[in-house]
Image 1 (cartoon, helix red, strand yellow):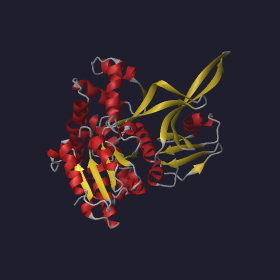
Image 2 (cartoon, helix red, strand yellow; image 1 turned 180 degrees about the horizontal axis):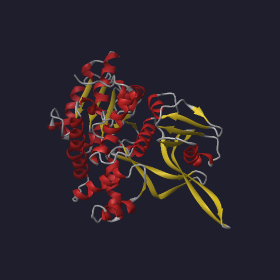
Image 3 (spheres, one colour; image 1 turned 45 degrees about the vertical axis):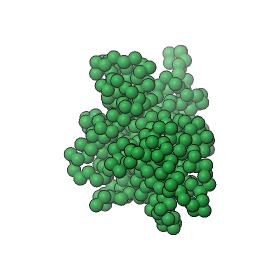
Image 4 (tube, rainbow, N blue to C red; image 1 turned 60 degrees about the horizontal axis):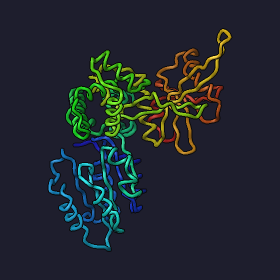
Length: 420
């Protein structure tokens, strides 16, 4: 029997948007749970609200879905089918179109449906180039995006009974894709994740963007996976490809391939932000894997540095909580031998959400005062009144030091809804 994860946060987002006159666009990587959320959880909720099941119209355009009716990929056939199901202007209809980017000129159908007052439209997609970046153009400013991520650690634990530390080890090793919960052995989990890379993600990116050099694409994925939590840019990745993998690519090609991978929701970038100077650095960024298990599998579980893995998971958690996340830089002037120079201190995350802002350091351990001084140096030099936080891997009681810096345990942060 399948393990069921309810995903109440995302369900509430759909409920809050019901009948708002806009096209609900559920985005995220393939296999992150978009279809389950919409066609199972949200449909179940609609039925509980006495919506007639005949008035919930569900179609999948996923090429891997055996139930997909290829005839409906034809625009006229699809239009005929949909309007044949929408029979009564006095009743409310809910149309779910899954993996809509597989349908040519899908915006015509979607906009047409949305023009009817009694039709509430929901679509899912796993390519941001066709959805996120062009929502206002495609849907005439009537698109309302709900971004879905793989399971958070709290969601992952909600379906399991083992102790939290055991689950944490499993989570940071195999990640939070919902189907990983249905793989019973270590071998099955590894095979599932590696199969997704080779048969789903890389194939999809290659075919969608007409990439000829599959080896180069694979190598860029490996380079991004190896450098999570490290400052990087196309030039640095080019050097890695050339010196380690003996592959020569120009910086523009690498930049383009990275954009393709981001469009497929496999990686996200965090820009580098000068906190005191209030400006961004365009030349260097950090990249994070949207699912840490996929990252580990792509590297054959060779690079299990828990400091970087922990940082990646904290980044993902902040994004799931609707924060915009930058990498912070604090510049201070220092005089050395009569010469003045600037010193840069890094803040792992600057997380903002409207008027809220938090400065956050990810610290695997703080065994002594010297390490505490090192981890908090950047936070102590910021100078403004926004909250400064250190998240530590150890199980600790939350406390605040004399500088107003809050310390809390990683699992407490991941399992609580109240913090931030």
